[in-house]
Image (cartoon, rainbow, N blue to C red; front, side):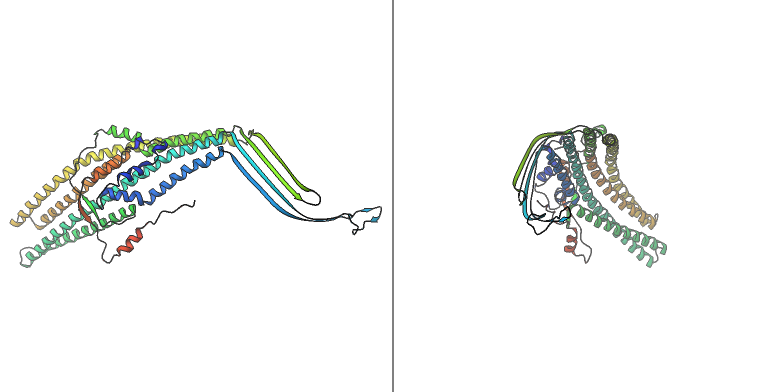
Length: 488
């Protein structure tokens, strides 16, 4: 499945996750790229947040749509009343006797109860209808934003995976360099002791050895950090992962930069999200304009009340059925201001789309150029290993016959292992840039992950915790925990 085939229609909204989850359930090695990608899709907190955000936006459509459906409300109360009243009246200087029955004194204890039912149905409400349309456009945009998050996770996982392999190969080169220069230092020390060379050559060898040791320590640190980045993405710790074997280093297919640019414009989820944002802003303008239109609704209500008061006992009820309309005549200019505001927001979204389109085109062009250069660079770096190895052998031979000194040998040693490390860098640059090109073109999918996964040989690359490390505590610190369960 390709990203371009994802429409904003409901059948396509399961998104990349459903495709990847079903495809990645195929049998795989314990820690190859496919397995780790599946772990990331299941455990990555950022992706889980994006999925929850998408579900929230989907639910907002039903919230708004409820305003177009019947509304029914009921209310009621039961009240106990205690009434005390005393009134005196005088006529022609006479004073009324308050003890005389009925002479202005009224006390009463009574109960009242009332019930009210109200129902309404919108007949015409342009604002709410446009708000429903706005919610639909938000879902359309969220489809692409979630797809972009998923594709970003794929490239992040692949990048972290190959950064581990890159660091491992560089570490192997630095270890070999340290051993080779260490042997050179031992030989120089022995030759100095028997008076064959000066102390300066020993110090030169020692300086080179110290530098190679520092390079090896830095490579070990890079390997540890690379493993930890992968663990942060997946929420899991891996002791070993499969290494990269022989792979085809060829130009992207089709080998046309314009093809990749066209694919990016049509399929890049960030570009599509910004395009959906234009429609979202356009609906916002229509909502503001709808504020000038009347709201018409049908309504019905029923009231019932009863009382056991001494003065008025019994019950009464009433009902109404009708149609009401509300037309805003003057709103202080707020409606016109809302229309202007929405128009400027629409203009901003159009510029945002153009900015994203230009950025994506530039990134695709750059990545295509980088991948094309990587093809030549890998070949050149591989040839450099052959050349530096031959140069090292010739330098050693010259050193043995006295035409070259130990500094020349040490430099040749460093050149060889730098060439080996540079070749590893070039290979992984090619793989990561190729996947990044597919991501920017909107073509980073299961097929791309599986194609790269087929280049893995199964040879394990392992990582051991530093001495004294607590594996259980380390794994516990990486546990992102179970996902929250929303209240029903």
